[in-house]
Length: 112
Length: 457
Image 1 (cartoon, each protein chain N blue to C red):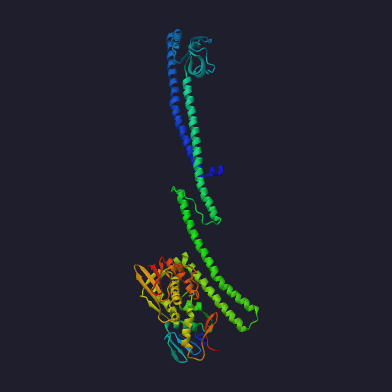
Image 2 (image 1 turned 180 degrees about the horizontal axis):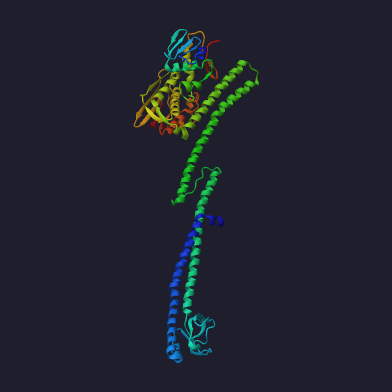
């Protein structure tokens, strides 16, 4: 983030939270140097979460911005998508990055 | 019914206008007849009298007084209705069948109307007469007249019939106008009374139709149809409100009671937190229900028709399938999509994708449970100018008798009482079908339920 502020003209093509990295050009995701294989929608989900890292992201925000749905599905479909993503980015690593904020939504953040 | 009301009706005003026209034409007609009969007779009499008096004046000029007196005496004997009088300058009667000069003479010559005593076989009668008189040279006076009693009688007869005819026309016209106005007013009163009763809240009232098929009947028929629709809408509204009240009251009560119970006894921070989290989740559930209701209302609103665009239905269906795929997998169901690419439809994207999502949601919730082989098939196809979308599960299905009912708002079958849901998913799909002028059909997928949306392109 500091790097972006230092060079406002440069297009940011890489996002990172902790040891998780996402390359918008090559569409590759790595955590601690390991490749993580994501479906296109999972990629967009992670991209959105990373762009809002440190913030609480609600289910409605995800539905609107990742799926472009402006309604609440009767079932919490987002929870299942999140748990899938979580199993890919957090499962084999010690420190969880994707946190559930009960009653509010989710937050992607590295430990302080 | 007040007379003043009657007089204020447009029918009565119209009747009065026609009456005035009619009376005017009756007067004109009778006036013409009068002029042609009585007037004609009068003119004829005047002409005859004029000719005769001129003839006598000529005789006087040629033969002097003796010839005139002689002729007058001769003619006076004729029992017909001619009247004669010749006077000398002093006023003495020289000849004629009148006793004296009429009183009302004006000027040396002219016409005069007077009454005289006529001797008949029955005695003496007072008769009307009209005469022409002139002053002859040397101060002699000559009068020639006719008895006009009979003409007078005819005249008064014609005048009387004229008055009677006008009076009768006026009377009949007024009565007719009043009766017509009263009939009209009675029927309008029916409409007004019914309207007032409906305004007071008796929506089941209908305006009586007389059955003649006239314009008032058409008006009443249209108003009744309008009332029919309003009543149906009101019933729908009432049903929805009742259901909303019923379906939202219990979760709200539960929520409130839990908070109350928590407040009553001291608890740790962790306990409070847990209760708050449960409360949030219940509030979320309530919000979902409200949002679903709003979506249906939106699908039924006219403005949704205006926000239609060309929609790639294939992509829309595949997106919904993709959204639900993880949920289906978690429920041990296979979600299959048979969707050809490039299906297009002029549609409201938001509402259509929500309808599809709801159908898949339902299929996951009510499809085959707890055993392998659970399957949901989503298909889309173009058939006979219609985009046909269907979602089928292989679960227990819905008995045929209940299929129409589950499309209504908040209807949840006993079998699914324990499944989470608001009972609004199919209602929205039905509203979406209506919005796109299409149909929704529930059928047996053998086994399972198939919901088909058939939307005209």
